[in-house]
Image (cartoon, rainbow, N blue to C red; front, side, top):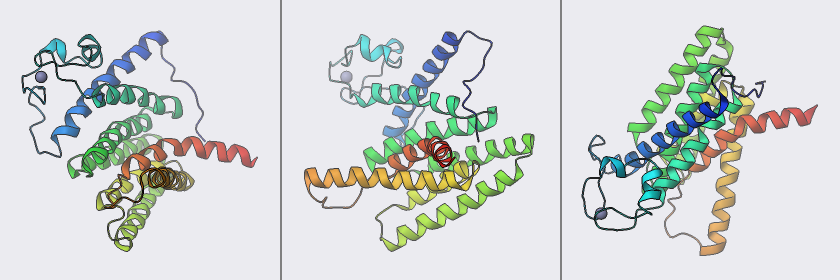
Length: 265
Ligand SMILES: [Zn+2]
């Protein structure tokens, strides 16, 4: 299995951590742009603006996390409160970028997982906010994962792993498609497309990881679903955002698989 070596670098560790943090905050900030504009079909290249007064943000008010703190969470122009989802997304993304670094070895494998972290957080946030999973993000995620792991297989001769990945991808997609058809929309078609990427990524580490990712995702969704129903009663319309649980389950899967394997011996 994968040794949990901390990424070795000749740079001082503190500098490396700072670099990843800044990178994570930047990606988090970009994800904030995506979650508002992709579902609304808005231009993602346009300068950021206040959703209340529509004034374009000054460059100094557009620095991830720092600007939020400096502005004390309010717009420079109209003093409207800035949603906490923006700093939250930036912090979560920065923290999550560390997960693959500590869990995996090999540049291309880590790169594939980092792509999953970034797209996964964006898709989770969009699913949570707008109850949809745009193809505009699901497509590039699948492409990134398959190409990056393909390069790893080519460089390290992991052809069996790549075949397992492809098999797990098809299997998980069909499984979710079946659930989609049987439950008539209990999960979305977007979830099935997301599952294709999850199958490929986890299947590369062994089919048990795919199994763990799926089980963990469903378990988390069920637990949260039950607490929601207990607290607020049955939702009138079943449009539960499923992607966040699948993404968290996937990020936990390899780690859980290692624990399972250690328990067995
Ligand atoms: Zn404003």
